[in-house]
Length: 276
Image 1 (cartoon, one colour):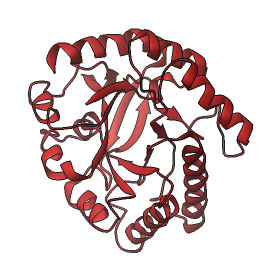
Image 2 (cartoon, helix red, strand yellow):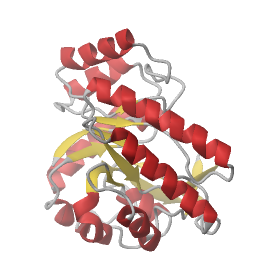
Image 3 (tube, helix red, strand yellow):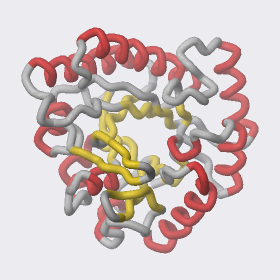
Image 4 (tube, helix red, strand yellow):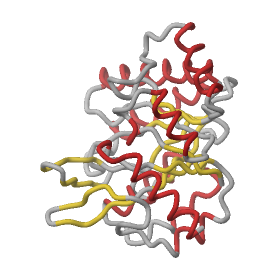
């Protein structure tokens, strides 16, 4: 298992500052956000020269762009919206391939699992299958994140179940998708956030399909949860490190609060090293 920094908490920092921080932490992996946030350097219209410059910047700081992340929702209610989302994933995958990214994080979607069944589930699955076909032979492997729907009341978050936070529907998706092109981004904190009392069990169930891990936590507050550093929230940090000893791949620290992201990432890394 190799630690690195995940993209989301770093979203307000320029890419070079993200790389400087990653290097200063003694890490060599940074998840590059690609057309996932409005401040991302590489958007769908990125030129070959822009891609070359980003690749050179990673090399300058001795950090590898092995992991990327983009945004999509294949569970949207409109077939048109799903097609547009698929087009964005394909373009992000093309950019990822040009950079040498090995794993690109995507989503199935954020719609409540109570609404994603029948035709809507099949449409999401078809989009994932088409995305997998698109990356075949490119060196990029897609990773579906275990992620719920998210709403907020001020700073307090509320996560709700989706097809990727339920074992049965996640299994159904993965069994219908080619393992060489698409796997799972295992995020145990997201599973705990929707009420899973033992998210570490997912590792044993899906171990052969896990190609990326996100490490973070959520802390319980009145009315919901707030992002926290590793070891500071509701996850069982005795059970989780025990199962992750069997994992040999990128494990990216995802501290979600931009305001103190450097401190949060450093706290998390220190905790992980002390408890691995």
